[in-house]
Length: 487
Image 1 (tube, rainbow, N blue to C red):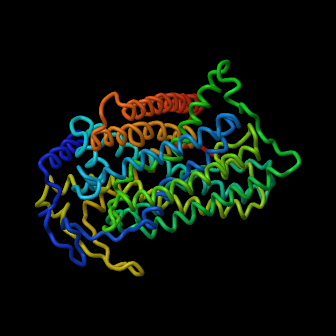
Image 2: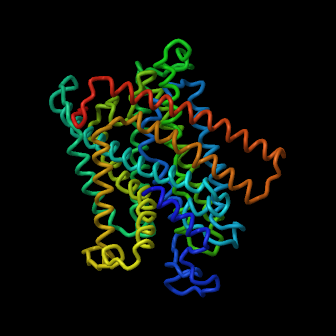
Image 3: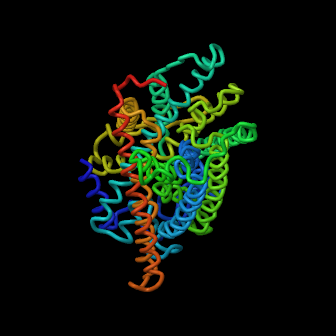
């Protein structure tokens, strides 16, 4: 089915059918110049989407990643991924319209942009990687949200019975609770209508990152704080201990995951109104989003490492490096859960839209798929539903919840997702589309620099993938029992 769906997207774009009635349609109060619903987004709503997508669960593993890399390589890795992500995101923003980035035809999705600029088998590869990673990210966010909910209960347990109390709790119930919430929010028709959820999520991400930063500073200034080392726990043993080698590679994957948002950049850009040109607004939003997140990442990662040194927990706020004040840790974890409710939607809505568009085109006369039902919700207003949307999105959430229960490995899953997404979606496709769009001459200095950057990022991503997969394999060999993991 996946192959058929990808072929559908390719054939639709090759034939020029993007549901565009005419290039000379006049704007109306509810329609854009291409006949689609009028976009209302701006630099601030777009930057909130970016921040929601970037500052996610990845920030919680940065102290652990720093511990694997040490003071020598850790900050360099954080800054390096930031610079590469920012640069390639600027290239990708110009691909929203083709062939000209300002006056060309709109590309509504990342896959549309790849088709317009590269075409061929690369479109299928892009779709497979993009939508597969969106699915994986939804699974990762379910794991993280449930881990934070478990952490709240454990924190209260430790506060009541002491830090040496067992307080072992399963996260299955909390995954189900998170899934039920996502089933409800998933019925929101598209990304345009979840801007408010992204703003709430962005505020929550600032809140828990700030709490983690504050707690880290408090612990770092204690007399017996472990300030870490130049080479960290992994770098100094990387040539002598295979496990340390995998940990270093996995740390790179975790940092890559922390910066992953390019896979939804075009979809976010498609919410921005015009004029001014969408690429200019998106570049401004990207600058704001990446600058803010880099500042937070460097602060949280470095302060967390300074506080815990080589013993930094895999998850800064749920690994129980902090026990007190327990109420503040609880607030931070509540903020994480609220943030991930919104982030789940930012990453899953493009996948929802892709499947529904394909099914609607294939079965145009099906009432089950296409008939709209209006449901009036108190405090929200009328909500347009189809029976297919209700069933498909509910099944999607159930699937991600079940997979999360089977593989609830936070750091390893984050590393795999980061490695799989970073090179192809953040680096390779934006660079290749830029070369085609701007007609960069082969073997020119710019062409060589771009390909060198692509090659280096490929090697780093491959290493991160190998390390993260090795981490999952190691965990599966440690008396692992599906659906029975406790924290």
